[in-house]
Image (tube, rainbow, N blue to C red):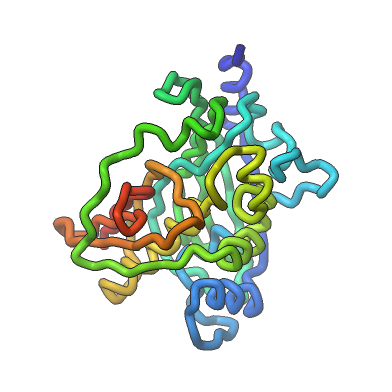
Length: 277
């Protein structure tokens, strides 16, 4: 039995974390996504690099069997075993520059529960205010979902296969790519790099492609297609992607913006997003 009223006591809780964005961190981020070139202090940083800055740094001894930090602390201690980054939204006000101190001010906005097709779900909404050398650069809403069903039920009832977009590129979800993104974000969750664990303990068919990495790739694709980063980016996850097959980035014009999505070559949609300028 989940005591939702106890968990809702976390609403309004705040946290601030900061990290200096170095040339070395920026170069590693660019290398992970096959972006060439060099960077120097003062250059505009690649879009979405803020997701790699100031991650939680729990001691290794305090990690759970799945590689996640123990429950509690800033986020409410939801007693459900599965946690996912379900979606969110970004509003971009300015660029982060290499060599600047980047701070993330986080506030728990909401904690709710509902019954889904795969069982009990608990949603935690977090607002982030990202500042770089004191300038507001990004406002972010992060949607986190906790669930308690067996992982094998997660892939049932997935959406219909999606038609390819007018713009489409194929991405190879290699183990080194997933490992590098886990390293960039200091993410110890074993579902992204430990194949025996993910198959034997969580019963998935392969390593799971990070939601934040998919969002980053879609954002980069939108920037590539329009020649500049969007001012607004919204997304949500619909079904998991595994490293058992290549996946695609897709885009089509949508009014004053782009509709984007990730999927396997033959579907279904894994993450959908909209970018606006």
